[in-house]
Length: 160
Image (cartoon, rainbow, N blue to C red; front, side, top):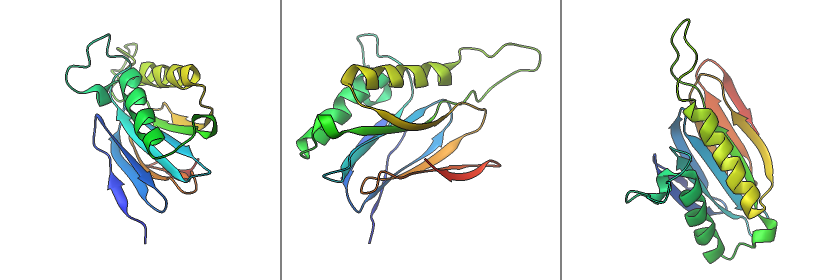
């Protein structure tokens, strides 16, 4: 039976098949899921902000650049081979807008862009993504199959 491992905000976890990684409440945050399809191991990070700017403030899992480094170290300790890693992402919404005003800060867009840049830096292919919009997401990642199930309120559920 699959165990469900919950990943909190500004947090990351690793798992092996048949476990499922879950994070809820992805608004402007990004859920990054990385796995080694051969070993069936992987991890998920719930990233809140694009960069730590040299100061992770006690929680490096909060930022795209430092969280990715931590996640990759943990996955490699599980035996994953960096040449086999694959990624999927979800989140990055623009949660707040005001009629007649341009979107402020665009944190969701900036988070998605930062995560994509980090994946390129590490040479990890991004297989699929479900980012943007103005709605939150809950994601379930099966590290055995690489399936990412994305649920949204009023926008249904899909597998990417």
